[in-house]
Image (cartoon, rainbow, N blue to C red):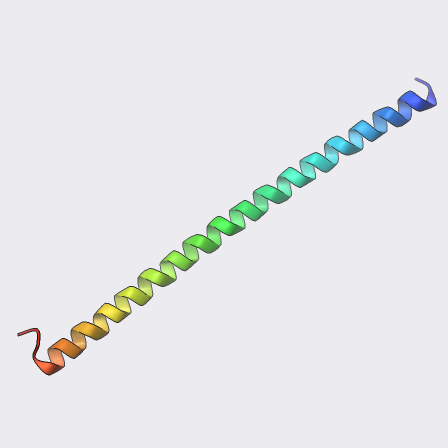
Amino acid sequence: MDNSQNASYRAGEAKGQAQEKGSQLVDKASNATQSAKESLQEVGHQAQAKAQGAVDAVKDATGINK
């Protein structure tokens, strides 16, 4: 293999490694986004349950539920 072929091979190898790294970063970002979305949904559900509990407590206290 002459120098130009060797340089071309190394450039191709580096490009492949960079593409793999990029793919891994995209996967990590996607996983982080999904995790954040799930966390926010859980927070939303908890807030909704607490709000409903507060509404029920007010109804009970004022006799509206009876």
